[in-house]
Length: 325
Image 1: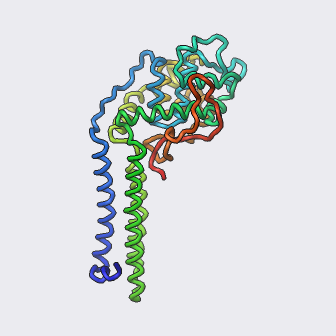
Image 2: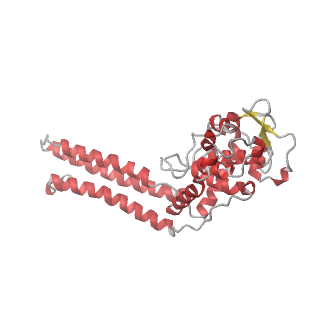
Image 3: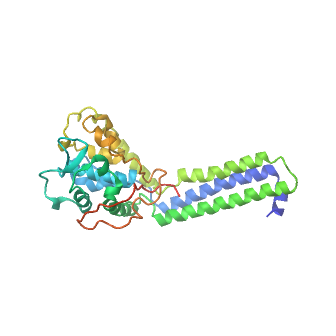
């Protein structure tokens, strides 16, 4: 390889080196587009009628947006909205089972697992802490991740790892070529190699950075769907601090569930009645498929909570699948 450098002038080498980075990124992009297939949006935007009957849909959206923490936000808010949970009348930082709640047979498996975690009252922070709801939330994450893959909104984890491994191979190749070129120049007594080092460093830094930004498990179809959701529900955000400012916690407006699924509990911060749900929840540590979070919001889950038993366990906050290693 060192003899090969004798036939390539420094300027031409830098051009070829930079072009190699661009070609590598374009090649990965084309490959990802081929694997994704049809990118035309096919999913319908959920309507705002009977939102309490669409908890599963909004949980799926929340998982795509913010990973497992998004699921916990929607499922807990849904249980409050349906009248199964409520804030303590004397201490609004406490969530507890309602004295008289509807038939638990109406709950989904994941909702029932979370509901069973409230055999004793929990603070809002405890309720949204993944260490309390780990098993139930992780099992839900596995379920929702499969749905997202089947809908073509995200890539299967194995497929995404193939792209990551290819990218690592390209990066290592560029690193070896760059170091070899610098070593060759130094071995011949060249000392004016600062520009070569600078350009090589720029290319080596820009490649993994560009990959982490451009290549995530979310597909183009998934991105289009997320954008459609944000546009469809953004007009409701202004109502949080106006129309619904006097609402009671037991009568959470139906529009809150889709709002929280898309924008998170932070959307409630402008509302005095619900501000504490936002400030005390502490669920911002998880990230979704369109961010730079870590792999495996639900794919690497441990034990499940079972069909109706308590799904409460220990653990830490788990994210969605993004572009990290």
